[in-house]
Image 1 (spheres, rainbow, N blue to C red):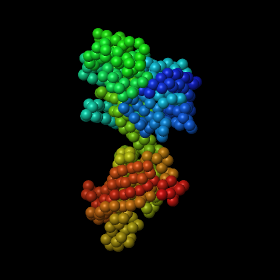
Image 2: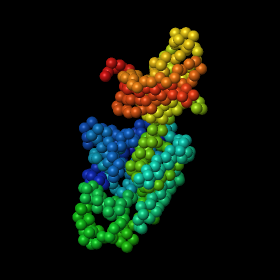
Image 3: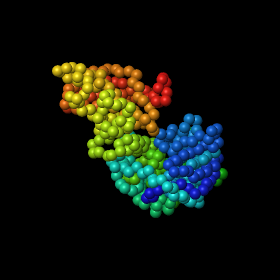
Image 4: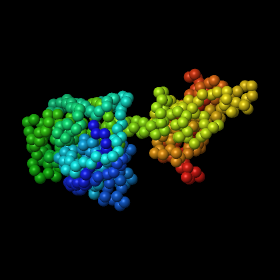
Length: 470
């Protein structure tokens, strides 16, 4: 796999109609600078809004992957993204003067050919690979979907599909060498659909740009000549529709024996581009679809954001420690004697954090609380919980140093046992809800696995430059 980032050498364009909207669109691939990533730009809208190609901007996954920001949307981006990932392009701007990219022949090949025509430029910055170092799993029992990422210092994908259909059957495929296999073995795999799905989508006014040349249609129920004629009218086709003895419409045979499985792998590649960075992992997927793909991409993206956050503040990696005292002081504004967290030992991004406070006789508050009978004030245990909570909510920001955490209320505070010198406080904070800059958190403190204190917090993230904002 490539070590340095790359973009394309020159702009290239292609035009056509979108699969679902049937609207015309010209799409132009533009070179982009180092570390700018993949972005879609709607040039037909005022202000030319940009939509980053990452999972945070997915707004619909019903019949493809749709990205959106405000009123701007781009439908069916997965084939375009698969082409970009398959050619190992890191930085590119995709300009569209419509809402949906041209569908072409239903594969990624039209985009691949244009990108190859543009050529590539190797950039100066190293690729920001996310190296999967732990097993990540997604399971949907109802739809029988499983996707797993396993540690691997490379990029491999294996896909299995089983639609319990005699024409399609059970199929599997695998991509093991991106540079050698993607263009020749996967880019030309077309989208496929069952006849019953085509009829349903046509009845709903979708696939307005669909025809029998940009999808492999698998016949999954009996249909007579009258039915074929009605389907032709629904799709607004000029040519007649027929069915061959192998179970496909218009003798549109698969390009590969397992073309449906290969296209599912292509879709998965495109959807995993929404992680926002290239990955090194072994991906195993059973019966994947856009909904599962995007949920899995979000899971991996969260892992990436967490690793990025930790790497930014923990300069020296220490076993069993997420953030040491130095890193904590880079995140929180607190200093002696009010810094009450020694280290963070676990962090689950936007969910839960676990910190440690070792309580010693040298704590300044023991001089007066109480002489001859030292007990840590309950209010300071709550403050320690609030500080680990602050680390948890600040991790979602690009630059935590620009923000302060203001706590607005403390509810259901309870103190179960006294905390004394020699105790080690384990401080856990878990997000209950988070919306915009406001959040609520449940905090619990333990000594030797015994609950000593608990409380619920409500607070807000406040920009340091505007500390009085509501």
